[in-house]
Image (cartoon, rainbow, N blue to C red; front, side):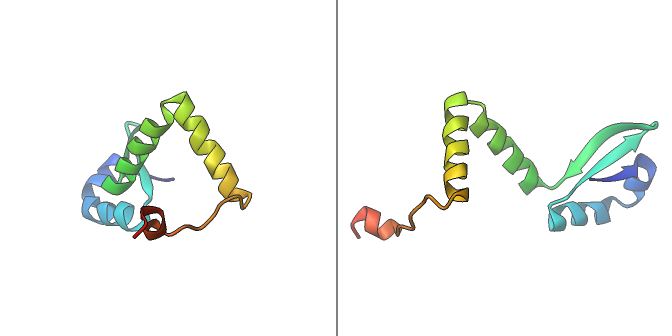
Length: 87
């Protein structure tokens, strides 16, 4: 993660907003020599919040992690939604 001091971030805010949105990057902002905040794009923030929500249930987290492992091991099938719906 890139780091920037508050005074520089304030002067370059428009460019930083472009960067975090285009690169899906996060930038740590240092103020008074301490990490103070993280600047990230709205889409990345929404994705993070959704992931936290999905993993907050232990049962749901287990299912998602098992499914991810299955995909990584090649244990999946490609199925068209139209076929499932009988369309």
